[in-house]
View 1 (cartoon, rainbow, N blue to C red):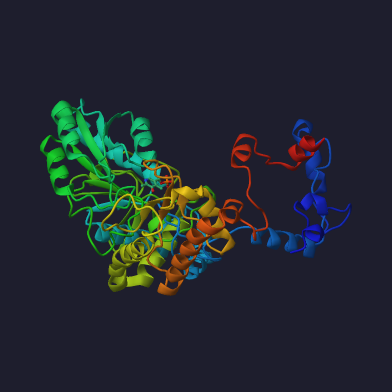
View 2 (tube, helix red, strand yellow):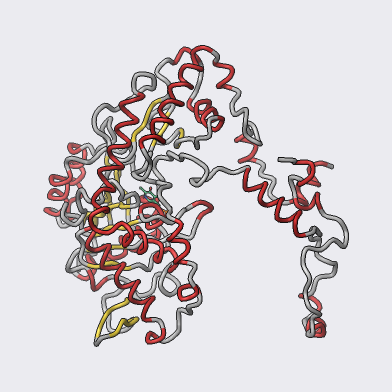
Length: 494
Ligand SMILES: *Cc1c(COP(=O)(O)O)cnc(C)c1O
């Protein structure tokens, strides 16, 4: 790439009067003069002026400075960045879906309502729950909606004192945040060394808080990728004192085809379609966090609902006395739902059963192949992801950060690093279910190579990356003093 020619910033390429477009004369020129002067620009906008090829090359080159799932293996643990089939994007971009208006009459968009309805049903079948709402727009939004359902249920029974939610200390930060936004009080239960719930501590809390417990939130597999084996005992304990069980199903892929939250005794759950069902989730959105409930809790779900009645798919908002009502604009992020539904259909029932077992197999294969050179703090079978605590040989001074940077030189995205906080040098690896054995073997080989380099030439690893367009950035400065506009950059230079 020729950085000088194409520039780091489009502003640096600007030449006065150079244009990359031609527009017809504007017949409405007079309209600007009819706008209140206070709303009009006093100066011309300072926009870069470039010809078409310069613009195209500039942005294409910029895109090469990034690394995405379509560039190489991307084993990011915790926030699954997995299979995003191109067919999903193509179908979601079809005019029949993008050209819709949320207020158009139901009879003119039966295809979209049918997709919406069938996705609700598919999620219910996959999770063993009774009914789903697709309205929430993210995982955290789903948590809030689910907890509001829990509250509404207890309120409907006159159980007003149930305001406490038990949450494991290893939970994703959104769990306590959602509970707090919902006006509930958080009671933290401890985890054992492997991240699973400390049952004795839970018993103590239940004895203490019994009649005040609204729900317990659980993530399974937990944030360390370990299956919670005590779920039957835990659900019984909570149900016996009248609480409900909430399942954080943000990363549901290891469960698909293996077991269902509904069968395990959970009452309410959310799923992140943008993690488990294929929408990429870089840049903060869009997302979708459908909420499912067991039989008996359906009346509390939000509206609008999409139902099939009298031979037609319909949008309903009225006649639901106990409903939470609207929890967002219209129906949620429809494009994400199209992708999720295409993903589910293109796998089908048989292949869907392979998702969980393959995700689990791939993770365990990497774990076992590397544990002689990387520190494995938790032995035993993991689910879709696992954590190393840095290199086994701590004498080299090579850190998890160094390993992550060196991986970039070999064309691999780094795993999640320094999370979870349980260990100092966490390296959280999730290969996902869709990678071939060749790809995974290549990764294992490179991870071993880096361990070897750490021993023989630690400087090489500590100064990585060496082959990327941008070397090691100052993370702290970038966070404390982000330069996000061209103006700021010029001001900073002066
Ligand atoms: C990602 C995630 C969430 C939150 O999802 P958002 O869509 O980012 O709000 C909740 N719980 C777990 C376990 C997650 O991984």
